[in-house]
Amino acid sequence: MHCEYCNVEEVVGVDFPIYDIDNLIDWLDRSDSNDICSIQWHGGESLLLGYDYFFRIFVSQARYPSRFCNTVSTNGLLLDDKIIHLFAENNVIIKTSLDNLDKAFDKQRNYSCEKVIASLNRLHEQEYKDVYVRTTVSSKNQAFLFDIYKFMCENYNFKWEFAPIVPTGLKKEQAFSLLPDSEPFRNSTINIFNHWFEHYPVEIPFFTEMIKFKLGMSDPPEISQPRLNVGPDGIVYRCPLLIGNHKYEVNHYISNTTIKQLYQFDCVWKKISKVECQECQYKRFCRLASCAYLAVSLEGLDGYKDYFCQLWKPIYDKICATVDRAVYTEEIHNLIKTNR
Image 1 (cartoon, rainbow, N blue to C red):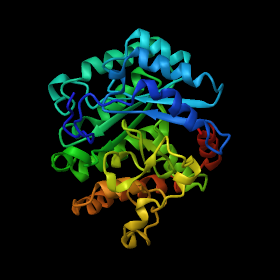
Image 2 (cartoon, rainbow, N blue to C red):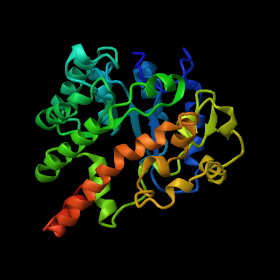
Image 3 (tube, helix red, strand yellow):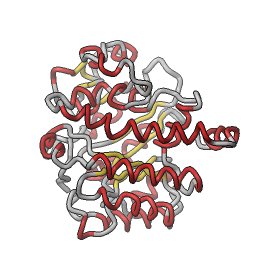
C-alpha cells in the first residue's frame, strides 16, 4: 500500500524462510520461562506470506500444545474467509488499521478504507472477538477522529486504538511533516474520553491503562516490556524498529545464545539521556520515556519530544482529574478489573 508514514524499509521479497519455521519455534520454546510465548508476526504486510505459510506455522507450534499465542499485524486487505477461519481455529489476535471512513480523505493509506471496512464487517459477521483496530492520526485525518470512534462504537465490538504518527524508519522526515496539530488532537481525544468514560461503548486500551495507572493498578506499559525481534535474515534485535540497523543487533537466533542471555543485553535506552524526563509524573506511563526503540528511532528529530509532551500531558491530566472526581471509585476498579 506504500502508506505515507510507513516505518518499514522497502526491501522486496525478503521473508523469514518457511523451511526454518521449525527451528524458530524450537528456539522460542527453549526459553527458561514456562509462560505462554507471545509472537507477533509483522512486516511489511504479513498476509502477503499467504495461507500456506501460516498453516505451516501453526503445524509447527502444535508440537508444543498451549505454548504459543499469535498476533498478526495486517492492513486488512487480504483477510478473506479462508484465512479468517484458519486464524480463528488457532486463536490468533488480529491487529489491523483504519485511518478514515471516506475514500476521498483516505490518502495516507492509499485509499484503503472501503476494503478495510469490508474486512472488518467480515470479521464482525463471523463473530471474531480478538481484533484490534488502530487509527494512525495525521494532519490529513485529525478532523475525523471522533467520527471514526463513533463508527467503531456503533458497528463493532473490537478494541480500538489511536495515536498520532510516530516519524520513524524509511519515511521519517515525510511522516514528521504529517504530524497532527496539537490542539485539535488533544480536543478530539478529550471529547472521546469524556464520551467513553460515561458510556464505555468500546474497549480503548489506552484509556483503560491510564486509569489503571492512576489507580495504582498498572503494570508497565506493553510497549516497554522486554521483547525480542527476529528479522527475515534471522538476526535478533531488542527493538522492532531497529531491525536492519546492525548497530543494535544482538545475535542470530540459531546461535547458542539463549533467550535469557539475549534479554541480558543492555537495552539501547541506557545509551540515551533521560534527564528531561526524570521529574515528569507520567514518566512510567509515557511511551517516549519508557520505550527505547522509539527514542532511538527519533534521533535527529529534536522537535518531536517537545511536540509529544505538549500533545499528551494535557490528555493525561484530564484523565487523571476525571478519575479523581469520580464518585464511584469502586465501580471504576471493577470496570478495569473486568477488562484486564
